[in-house]
Length: 334
Image (tube, rainbow, N blue to C red):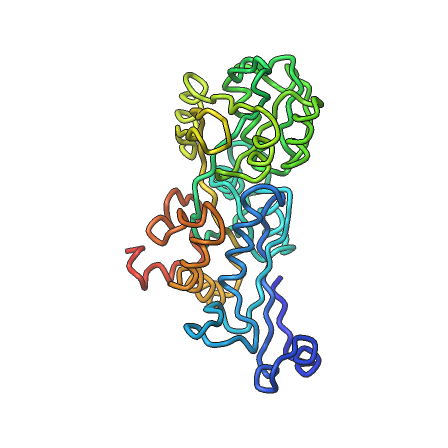
């Protein structure tokens, strides 16, 4: 939940070194669930948290100060990923979070991989952010050249509760495999990369905007490959699930690593329908402020692809009323 402190203003002012005028303001705290610290969600979450924050006592927007929401302190919180973030939003543990478009839609409707679970009917969209690519990573000399080659291998599917885990299982199925055909590991980010480098696993899946830190570091330390997820496997997935798109990870994305065909999903930002309409309106407005554009462009390699023009791309969960108001005002939503 969002926490508003209307009392003990003097204590807050002293703790933060604020002026007397600033101490009269309310402090609002807003959490953003992200993912593992070595993948893309976490650093992008940090950039967005900075963009939408404006603590009391900040200099004016346009005068070197923050252009975020008055009195708001936002923070990026590391998590297990998409499913974890959605559950945290629905339960009220976190105010917002990032999730893959496919996972969010299935959670909202109680369909697909979430069939049998209560629909997350209070889930609402703030914005579509960027495209995420499914990485299947192996050592260059592993002999793993396709999804089918994973049979009998030690493969990390990421942690249950992550979007990667959901998609990895769908990819195995499309490739004619199941968990019974591999030795399953549940490692995340740098743990998976280190395990591959040390010979403890043979391959791992990661869903992240490229370049993602764990793979960048791994490629600089040892020879790896991005195993293609294309051909019949890609066709089966894109035909069955509208949120998957055929894409590629270009050559040179990772040092010395050839490009590979793969599939992608959208990374989106969600909150609860119960979140205050005015607050979400102001947060959405701050996200797309010109000053935020500067922060996004320099804050992360994926930042430049986070644009107002693509803010509604692939959105399958209803917009929050506050976000919808903003998009109507600027003409993005008719």
